[in-house]
Image (tube, rainbow, N blue to C red; front, side, top):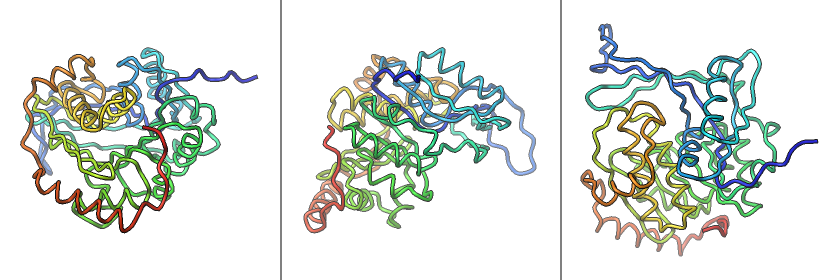
Length: 340
């Protein structure tokens, strides 16, 4: 007789990774030799790191993903156990876990990722249990791969669960997934890849109309985050910090977005909180090295310096008017969830 899962606040479904962080004095040129300043292997992965962030901030969390039958898989199990996360790590026999070698530039903290992922680590619909997905307040997906993520999103929406997504590329089935997403905060490049439109203020409303998402936005690194809520654009510039390593900043942004959303905060507050959490994560090495307490994040929101705005507010107001006019002419093709 299988045990029923306890209700939780946040469920993350998707990737985990064993990240080897290699700090270098400068990025190597082709054919050059560069000394290594330090090297350390730490746990990471999109959905996994977002789940860890929410757990540390006091939410009850669950993670669902696949691991290999190796030391890296054992590392993931140990870390989830140490964090107190209800983890459903599906082990694939005789398969290496996902791993990445990440070159970190000492001067800027910017990273270059070299990664490997065995296709056997892809979740399948048969790997998922409906009650893992529906016994929560919010489901977060990184869309790897889209087909099981789409099934999970539909189960969640049918159960009245909020669905958030972190998408970075166009994979088969991603459009089916998007039709069940309430809050999409994608990478900077994703809206253009999906729509063929380079301008974010034009692409985001088009995605919203096409798929019926409640909010569609993009994370922009130090430029912050831009989001469209169906009526207007909301923009938060990034926060200035002394960056050590930008690995995992986006993952922590998504964890913070979910946390503030579940708090019932307004969208402008959610974006600012998420940008601050992501910035602070860059002040330490690793995908989860700089996850700071909520009190420190709020202090940075109040006292921190911001990078110059990447968008002119007057132009965003004009784009908001154009987006509302287009929405009135071409209403959304699907109905978003009633969750707020």
